[in-house]
Length: 232
Image (cartoon, rainbow, N blue to C red; front, side):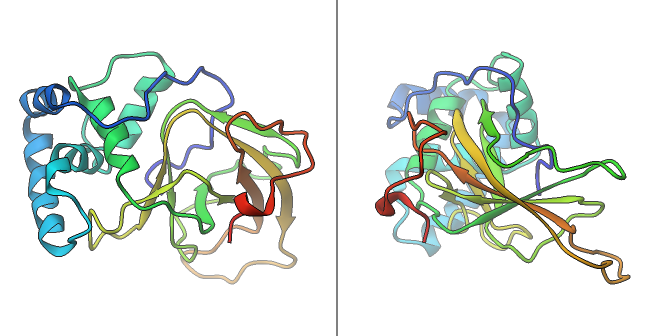
């Protein structure tokens, strides 16, 4: 996982509009993005040649998403820490282009996986019924057969708003799905496997928590979603 930390319970989400970026915002990102922008541009050019579904006029938006998938100042780990502490975006025009780029990518409705470390003997920090507020962007693996070293907990999320990035950046070790900021999640159940894991170098966690993304404005204490909004 690119960011093994669990969804945060504290911090207010930054108000980011879900809209197309403007030409002025795209130009400001191009001027301020430096080498991160240039490296992402090369990846986007490859993706545009391989996937006709990607729109050339949205190139700056796709570049912002590629920057988020990297490990520089605009990468998800650094950016999300900045957003949760109220700091400024690393590049001018970056956030509106990133939001615009995500909304142009396919929605991912299958279960996604995050993993996190737990102290020895620690219980799952998400009891059934707990509501988690994520003020920043959130990344997860679209593949469920991946394991990170020393992972102690699987977090399996039924998404509504996650966007698939596979078409944009091909050949990555992790097929990443990204949630926009300000999403809320509810823990449904905690499952623990019986017996000891096999003695191998990379073992899956024994404990998993099942989580679903809440519909915006949904009462987390309601009985559940309508069939139209349930993941398939």
